[in-house]
Amino acid sequence: GKDPGPLSGIPVALKDNMLYKDTPMTCASRMLENYISPYTAEVVSRLEEAGALIVAKTNMDEFAMGSSGETSYFGPTKNPRDPERIPGGSSSGSAAAVADGEVMAALGTDTGGSVRQPAAMCGTVGIKPTYGLVSRRGVAAFASSMDQVGAIAPSVEDTALVLQVIAGHDPGDSTSLKVEIPDYTEGLEGGVEGLTVGLPGDWIEKGLEPGIREKIEGAAVALEEAGARIERISLPLMEYGVASYYIAATAEASANLARFDGIRYGLSSVKAGNLRETYSFSRSEGFGPEVKRRIMLGTYALSSGYYDAYYIKAQKVRAMISADIKKAFEKVDLIISPAAPFEPFRLGEKIQDPLQMYLIDMYTIPCNLSGIPGITVPLVPPGKGLPVSVQFMGPLLSEKLLFRAARSIERAYEE
Image 1 (cartoon, rainbow, N blue to C red):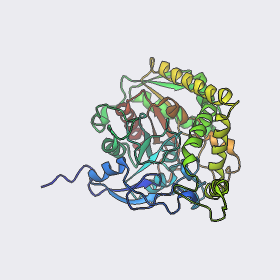
Image 2: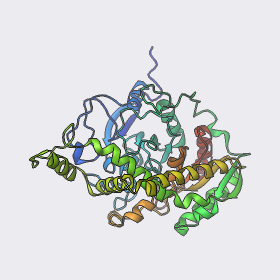
Image 3: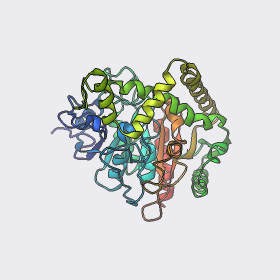
Image 4: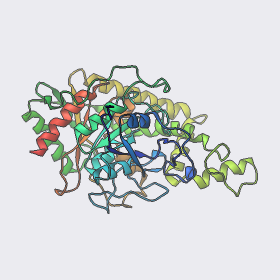
């Protein structure tokens, strides 16, 4: 006689930067190799209250710093669609587990595209909600002004069901929004007739593989055939998104990861003979190369003499990008773009080229800089080639509209 909940019996996996009481939380780092969660993250509690079965923690890029699933201390994640290729990152294991049918849904975190991009690379649906819509209490911080928990699932409807459960105000999270949560599954089949969708031609011309451009243009045509109006728009400041993001995000990472000092918790080097060596050796041994790189970049940007030149300037550019996007939404209801500039590449192919790795997220980063929601939907069904996805971006709190547009594309490519 008891309601078992909307996710009753559904197996769900968690990215391993979320606390789940009495189980390990490693953030895929040697630094937290033996850390045991003291309590359960709010989003995980909500899943369990809805009847979901938490069956696994998933691999990820170390401390969510990476875009390919290759920076984990425990080894790279592989793409189920082609095990020789990357699954995207940093929520690599979550996307791969869903794509492989191991779970029906998974949670990830999205700081610059880390839910949407791996979902796209693995051929699943991934949503990054409006900043503050989902609680971050009990989730390890990377860049606190941009981190957001998101959902990955096989279909738009499944993704909407998961977001329905985890969204909502949490008084234990100071950034949590006090807003009413609509029924995201209601009106999913409403279509896009009458909507104006912006296609930023200047932005998607730069650094995009020709084959992906054709598929995005094809998705725009499918929207037109479904009744939407496609309007070519200009977003001239988007090309500065990657530069702005990698200063702001690394600065916040530098501050957030200062707590891993070899004293309070985490790895403490047995080689250290004094306090200075404890700090130095523990952090040198505990963090991998990409995390060290980002900590150093962020510390440099925050240092005396460079703070104004880098960090403050990056924040000003971030504000300009947000204003640019807000202005675009005065003319259009949604914006359509690629999810990534290229198809999943081979493991090891770009890992030694940080710039190429950072450019993977060039289309997803603007959502995080401005706090708006975004969703990625696959355009290539399994067995028909490497995954390619389209991204929809919407104004603040437009998740319901995003799901509707995403379902319209999903339906078009099912037929």
